[in-house]
Image (cartoon, rainbow, N blue to C red; front, top):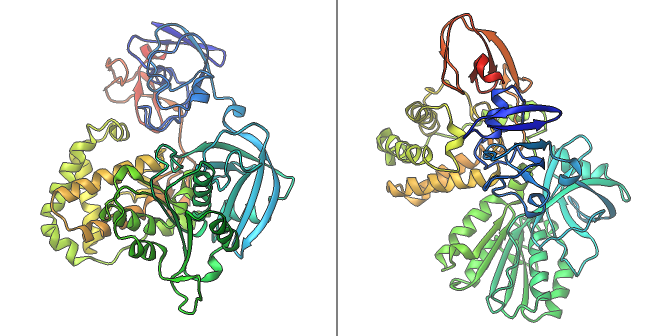
Length: 522
């Protein structure tokens, strides 16, 4: 048995028990979500002792070097002292050295960080307001070429962070940053490879960085950058990109407008991805980068595969989804409720293809059978029976596809309110579902429609902090921590499996509902 010292107190950790399990058993209110090393919410720092193998799974090298680890997968081999993360290790200050309006709703912000930042063009930073609101924005700058970190910010309607960056953050002001993160970056291994970059809106930011990084590295292949907007005023840095084109014969910039038939040369009429794939129908051996509107990104990804691009050579970043990486939706609760009450028109074609529900049930059975053994997804379903879950999701999707009012359970926002789920886990689950639906022979155009429905709930599910439940239109405080109760019926301790008799006082976890007997409190 190991002893774990945490914030001045010592706790026992039984053989085979993780530190998180030991802490929960003894009433330590540690933040956590997945309990399997996926979300990193429970990350702590070792002060002394020895970390067992696997305790730092997936942690950034810079944090691993400072002995950060994951209590949910750490089964200690000796006594340890641990502490919460140090604020300075996760976020640090950056000074705003310049702000420049690039378009009516786009501003360029240049930052000088107080610490050296090792990054690759195309990665993103997390920016945090003084009140804790956090969002992620892609870097347009190139290391070694630019003295400052450069971000392009689009003003979003009711956007808590983007409006603050536009209106309140001033030159010479400071902001907290964290990162960089992301793998939508230039890969210098094959400098002969042709590159296609397609972006919309401020999806241009990472693509500019990637293109400039490639040119600085002496990339020999051709580089095509297609930037799209519905109208000319949605495009920006046009002159700078044409100048880059003049300096580098291998770089080609194509501005595209989809709703302005009067746009003169050099503007191309049409959506950026449509123009790009019409010009380049065969792309075997190419690398493709996509950034911007998620519908464009997903559609372009499929077209790239059809044009012969290998999956590993398609890298994507979606600016709308990046808005969700940072924190739970922090606009007013009514906006969240409207999102959670969204309705889709009945889809008779989909329901017919699903054989009036028979195939839907088979798909969900297949899917959740995989989920319950999947190392990434199964931790999110602890304490839930597979059959009950299948029935619940079946009722929900049947109502979506048919319009029949037959689902009376929690909406997605409430049912996932406590789960901390990152974008990559949501993407992973989405791909697993797509593959499952495809195996059952559902046509591709219907799979696309199904994906649109699931994608619409991303904002209710992806977050770095739990939501409070919404009841009668009011968001409730998030319930966490422990309480004590005297049992009026018998039960079983969720830690040692001892029978708990009626009349015995137990500690229970308010969110999980797990019960810990008096023997497990120490």
